[in-house]
Length: 125
Image 1 (spheres, one colour):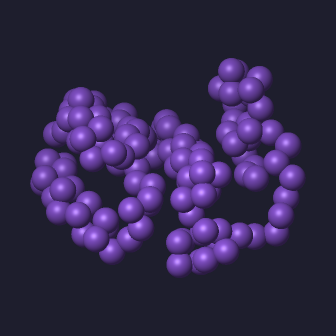
Image 2 (cartoon, rainbow, N blue to C red):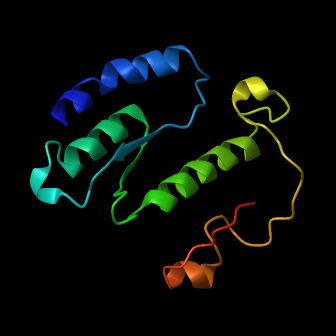
């Protein structure tokens, strides 16, 4: 909805004011299966995300298009920031809680073969 999109700047300012500057934020354009009823163009969403340093994706809960990919993409960005030392994983105030250590045997989102065939892994790290 156009009204929701119009409020993004103030919501983003609020979120950034009360969180880490390294926070990962993804902007989701939902109901991508309803192209004819769109109020905000994909280009507008992409431009807003680019201007504000956000990840952008369009999803559809009805068709499940890009839903899993949105979570995987966000997790990858968080993981990159952990690897760069931008988040202290021992401080839960960063919003990260370390669980039991597990061996990561394939990349997030499934094996390269599964990704090429459009089948992701249902598991996580």
